Image (cartoon, rainbow over all chains, first blue to last red; front, side, top):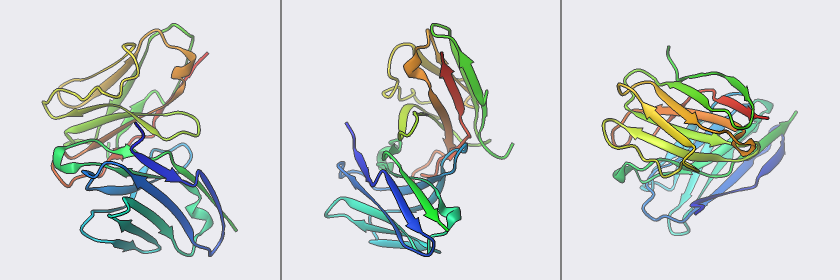
Length: 113
Length: 115
């Protein structure tokens, strides 16, 4: 059962533009929502994460928006740079039960110079 | 080392052979995970070790797949009688094992090619 659905599958943005990646989840017990960034040939690395007690979290150019009622969350990358070109994965887990992360299918972001 | 270490980085094998993939987690991390990433696909959960608890094997795709973790540290993922559909990057990750410590630290993966 696919519990975290991510879109779009691929995204091309011009330098300086805003990149937006969306995720939707099904399990209402999920209480931890991270985003991971993966460069070619490397393992994914944590970028930013949010818990459902807040609706938005910002770290530099990266912002997570969270809509608990809609069971959706999104990643916004402001002033996108060519160095942001990577694959981005959203994920979710129910940390109170010690469950493992369930990942979305990934979005391949290309930022053109 | 400072990060999660996986070996081999690349493995080419013939259909029907057995392979072993090794993961050395970050020191002090009691949780260890194996994920599989097929070309252009997301991260498919395989197995999860948490301290001394019984592992969560719910993601293993068939009985040809098994994993063990010795001494609460190094883990080995074994694939018996490999098939072409087993070709993928196998990623290992570790994390601190307490509530709220959600960050997984991934290794660079072992790329398996089954001919």
